[in-house]
Length: 214
Image (cartoon, rainbow, N blue to C red; front, top):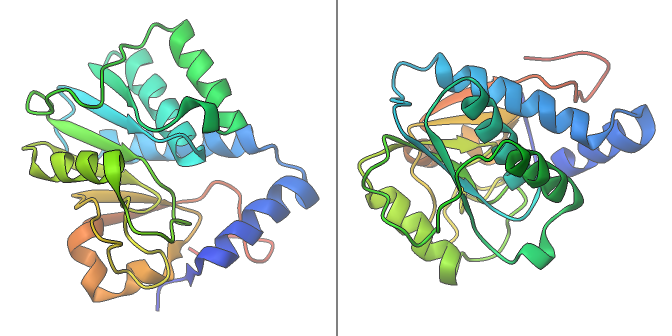
């Protein structure tokens, strides 16, 4: 059986790594994004000719911002769409958005047309989502799923419950997913595979013991 963790374990391991072991959250974010970037550029199923990065206000969105920056600084055509209330953005998200704006990475309205993109990066929600997807987020997820672009999800497809593998009303249907540290237990459930697509597991220095199990 593939190593997998619950949403609660994921949250606890993040906290332990940052607060007890002492690896700063921004360092983990950079490591995660570098792994995601390499997953994407080495995935022949993704056409990175024109990429849209959907950015939520939490740390999943922070990861997405770093991915956008890595793509942009390596000469990929990439744009950012910010979703959600900026007043509720996490501290690390704010820091990464500042860096993206230093590089003048193009920003587009999340309500704009998605038809011109070849790949969409899903950085809306992390694995801790426990409520039904509603409002603007639901509309954007449904629009992304309807687009011709392939979708690459960060950690878990937005809207998918990390423990059950079931959609919370609606969920991103990704062609591929970069999950952080370990798969989430819901991603091992066969009914989730229509949403996760091909799964990459990125080692960023978060372990249940003292070394990687993957």
